[in-house]
Image (cartoon, rainbow, N blue to C red; front, side):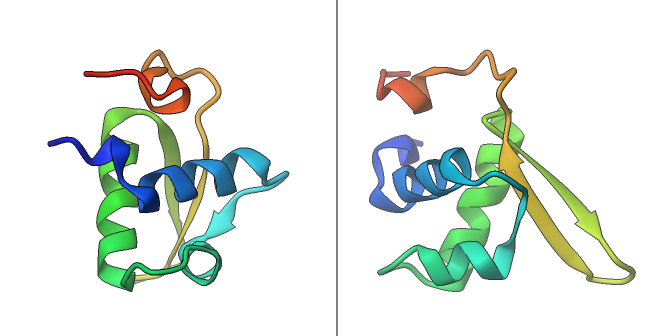
Length: 84
């Protein structure tokens, strides 16, 4: 899948890079324009699986997820705009 070229993915990565602290999913949703909540959540989970970002569930039950940039990521093509 070539989602790294999508505007939503670029926007998520830029938001997390510029943030000084982890952000909740809801905060990211409010900052990413033109994408549905489901699409943003799917992209966050995909980027977490790739190791580009990190995420953690806080709270009980379904709880809230927080997300932050993985600065130790070996998967730099997302940041640099490279190809798979």
